[in-house]
Amino acid sequence: MNSRERVLTAFAHQPPDRVPAWCGASPEFWSKAKRELSLDDEGLRRRFGDDFRRVFAPYHGPPVELPPDATYETPFGVPRAGIGYGQPLDHPLAEATLSEVHDYTWPDPALIDVSQIRDEAIVYDGQYAILGGDWSPFWHDLIDLLGMENMYMKMYDQPELVDAILAHVVDYYVEASSRIFDVAADVIDIFFIGNDFGSQRGPLLSTPMFRRFILPHLARLVDLGHQYSLPVMLHCCGGIAELIPAMVEVGLDGLHALQTSCRKMDLAWLKAEFGDKILFNGGIDSTNVLIRGTPESVREKTREVVELLMPGGGYVAGASHDTILEETPVQNVLAMFDAIQEFGVYDNK
Image 1 (spheres, rainbow, N blue to C red):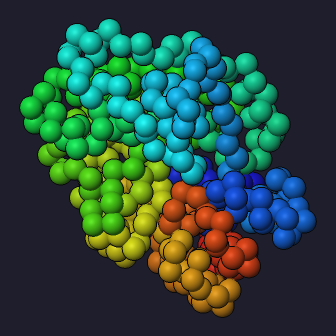
Image 2 (image 1 turned 30 degrees about the horizontal axis):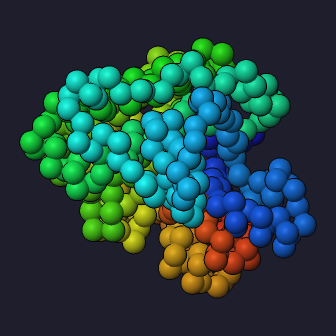
């Protein structure tokens, strides 16, 4: 099997030739690994055995004048600053009325540049599983626009206002990804989206509140992917065990990245409860194993996770965080990916 066939077989909950491998890494780790191993981008992906490739359609919004401390501005007009994605410097809809929400300057999905995305996917010649579509972090945009504590209060005091903001945000993401898929769905394999609904101690909102405010919009994105015959995979950090049944109900196909250090994220229980209903991606502890371990302990822990989650297909092996951090030893990451190759072989005779 090539990588694409391997991944799609796993999504079909059938055993491929071996467990597919996933590598998400911070730019800082990626640069360090390329330097230490004397490899270019594609060479590093191949050394790690990464079965996925990703294509992007950038948003080219109108020029904006950033506040002095801002690093960039989101498409929704929120200035941010700090390491990585940073933190919002302002919450532009914190005191907005419902009419002001509707009158707000929402981003234009026509400004998504889809001119190159098909060619970027075709380069891989059907050899790898191609991730595409807009990242669609609508939960984070809601927090940015209102402020977190304010958002929670408005869910109780002004639920119609929260509904209106979410509708506008997800309208944008649905149209943006539709434009991407209209030109490239036949060369994209998986609609990959991301929203972190969990913390170390559990979900960031109760199951009833998740179902009331968030699930209908997650369902819209899942339905969109399925309209283009694409499985949909959600990146979601944290302890989200209580939310998984709702995700399964709306037809979500894959869940990344299984933070095992969080409350109730026990891999054996997750596999038993949901392993035949949703693909799991990740589960190899990024902190206690990859950062703090040795190559020998990483190899053993990787073996344990792979052998636990691989039966019957429906599993992609990788780290338990969306990006491997700079402080992670490169030799530990190599040990993880080598162990996936060693222990993740199916006996399909």
